[in-house]
Image 1 (cartoon, one colour):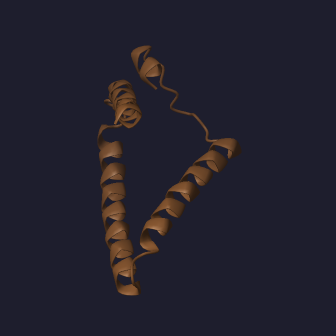
Image 2 (cartoon, helix red, strand yellow):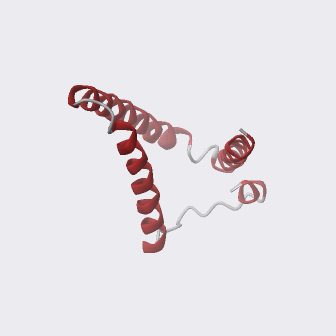
Length: 98
């Protein structure tokens, strides 16, 4: 991601294949499973409350991302890839060392 942003190589017509969708599905499954394990100790009301809070916050952030992406996506496509790559590298370093 970082190298593509630096090379200014942005594929606007990229299509997502079935393999990429399956990998994302498995990643989402693992994430949901870990949350399920965390919620196992909650009673029903706490679990539903936590699920609704997560649902509302996720929806708001996704809607904001769509609108911001439509507004600024084409202007900052290359720079966004560079920033995204740096953020992902930072997250990886934080997970590895801490």
